[in-house]
Length: 343
Image (cartoon, rainbow, N blue to C red; front, side, top):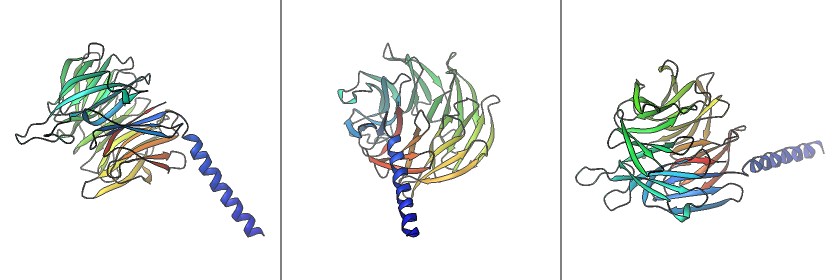
């Protein structure tokens, strides 16, 4: 009798845990840049509706605006010569690239603006007023500053070699961006629109992530299987942390206690893990199995859920950040890379 009672309690506990996890996935939306398929997928968490829409680019990255109204996407234009991020034609040239702006509530209606930004755009962020967008143009080693009202590039800021992932500081005054082929991070002053510092960090930095308190920036080093930490006050590297294979995107929890790192591995031998770094301990405190080719990562505004794109599985894993377990996997378009969350 006691054994049966204990078994019932265990079963009830498991049901309650599952129900609690499901209850968390009840608000907001997630958007993915499905690069290989040339699509953007919208996931509406409350209804479970998933919509994949064909677009005019191979989108590598997407970003929601601060007010949640606009969705920005960047990538190379779809044509016969360029089929993927950074692909080149027979002449060794990269394709032209666009910044597309959508109404986040209706991506299927098509872009409200399409803006030429240069050769091989990689990532995009917007200021808090959605007046300007900042796009890394990897093929030209510049940061393109786009006036979203005028719908055109108004300035180009020189960076290191092959600029890729970027984030704006919480106070909006600086942008840190990773120069993949320059083994460095550029610090851009937003008011002056110029590079104020270039920090040597290690081999193949791909993306950066600020702590919400602005004190530190975490940078993935794809070819070293490490993440470095930069003190934003001194702009010096203060730590180097071992993570999984081929780390790509990084994202901090709202309380600044943890940083989630998506480990993609290689096309021949993809990784399927997410490393959770303790920002106090400066080491990995948990490793979570996500999906093959874990690439993009974003965390919900309340810090309860993490969303990870799995490029080789064409899916998004939803992670409960308290249990640190995958609670749901959602199929999206082909080759999802960048991911963004809207409350």
